[in-house]
Length: 452
Image (cartoon, rainbow, N blue to C red; front, side, top):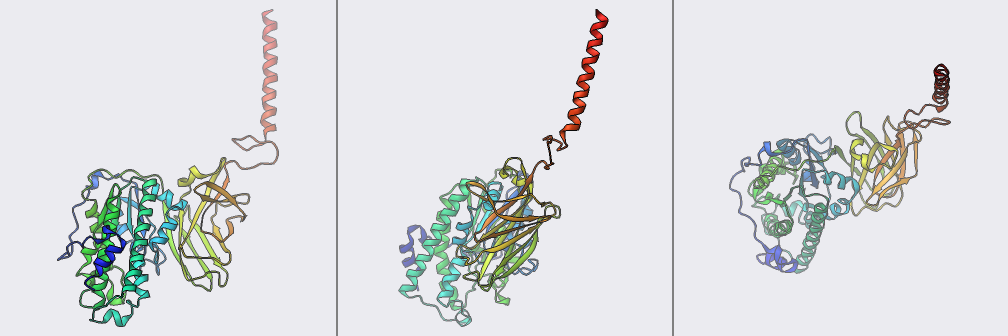
């Protein structure tokens, strides 16, 4: 095991072989941070990541369907007076994030961000550890060390190399969309010292931390938040181990917020003001046998009720879906000419999800009316899709993830000739205009006779 770091480092590149930061000896205090007075208000914090970003298993997630207000993005948003769009999705890997970060709903949120947080990669390593059986209760509780074979080390090197490539693509994509500061988190080790699996996970994450730091430093305005060193020796209070859970406790989330704020402390410039983006997000799970997910996203006036139905055995695996909805005004620029956005709803999949049959998505909003149309947005623009639209409801059938918008005409259609502004029949006002012209001509004729 002593040579594991060196072996893996040589396989994935010299940049991966940097050492782990010094271990924190005590819980970090709330760090001195960017002055609140220097932060633009009414901005947007966009959080990208997995279940840690989401706040998985915290008490206010409504059985893990909505992001937690105690998760570190919400705490940082409160600190900097920023509204928060939390795109954290439980179970997502770096590959899932790459597959979704270029979708229209992600791009709109990111382009309007004042601040971005990025915490990804834990599931990349957990999938590998699970495959090796490192997460079995017997292995976790054992005090004996864990040894990786040469084949295990080769497999791990491939996992880390793929993670590095995905992180580069993610940051390249974000930098094309925005110059906003990005807080990039290292990964914490959820296993305390004294158990056999701690040593191997610590060495693996030392390598991964080196990848995160080296990649992050290659991009402008990216700040490294050192979660690994902050959690070391404090797993029993920062991680919910007493419930056999490797996710952060409320205190652990507070520590993540602290190290994120510490990462920004060196940046004394005001955060750029965001665009008008207000987004609600929610997570849904469906088993391989299919099923139905439903809920309501958004504020009262602009809320979108949804129901997403999968036929039996529609999916090749049990899957996580990320749903989001925006206020219509934030989408005005993408509406086709002479239309207005009535409602929006986006569905994001895991990269590995394959649908064997179409799903049915039904959107409900009191503003939806017969005659409205449904478009799906992409990088190339808006494309009309077949949909059944009735009063208050639009139903779409599709096999792909998508960002769907329901649009309606800016002027209500009226039978017969109409005026573009009022939509009223033109003959009444046209007749009045002719009458006024006739009267004007009569008065003009009388005036001429008087002069003569």
